[in-house]
Length: 409
Image 1 (cartoon, rainbow, N blue to C red):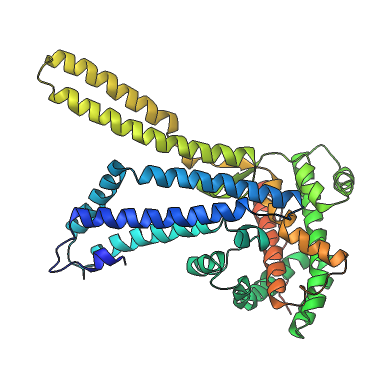
Image 2: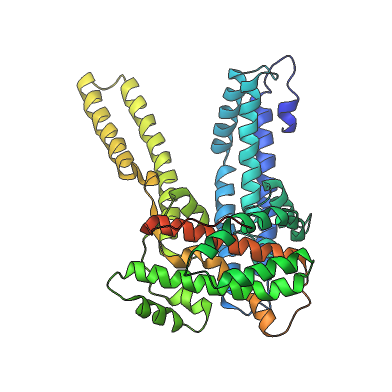
């Protein structure tokens, strides 16, 4: 809970000026962090892979946009508007011990911490060196501390045991029951055995092989579903024609038929360069601009209705005209965020061709020093479980008949 709000006495909300000061302090703090991360990315050197260069370029673009937005939020009128809204919330439920008061402040705190986390994800450590945008385990506070360098990413390995249970209880029985993925099951069993003997190096050498094998089988099946007139052999030949997994994911002729929640697409657009994701992000920006236009139109309507220099008929005509403008603006966005954004397999498998790919390349070139770690086992098992969940998602999408998975012995 912020310092000003904590100073409420006798259930009296703080003065508006105090809330404005608090808002300016927070925005300046975020702007300082954004500029720090921007300079960090601008000074980045030595990155050779295309994806690494793309990440740095994207970080710079995203941070510049965030700084622009922070400057806009720092405008006195916007600070006043924000502080007035917060004061209204505190005045509505002034009792600090009431649930409503606590909930209002908690929601505000979550928004502020969430913004700081979204900002910090563009640090080189989080977005590039460790590439954690696709890791879902852990709390926001943990990921924020990792992004800011307070704790190492290896701290997330505490979630490895839970991930291993999921692999054992869900993924392996599924793979064992499906002919397309059955060949990977024995190797996964060996991987599990190595893990239980704390043989991290062997596990991390085998896992990328297993993951690529399963991913290629998935790609073959998806290509066949997207091209129903093609024989399975043709789909298999098509996928085999791509020597690298990276080229298969990036250059494969994948259809945009995988639905994604609109707001998930907006979030993913911050880390993945894709036309459909960019469209979703731009649409949300356009809606934010439109909301400002709607506020202006509402103000104009009020001014017209209060204008004593014009007749009632004139007021009515102008008010109707402005109302229609507002209605048409709303209709142009109506329901957009309720409809899915359709993306390709490339978007879903993007995480496999970034840092994960570099770790795989390290194995090929015999650089094993970083692989004898439980942390890397956690990353590999997270990748495998993500692919398993994607398979289930796509089987439901294409309505593939499912086999009952056998019980795990």
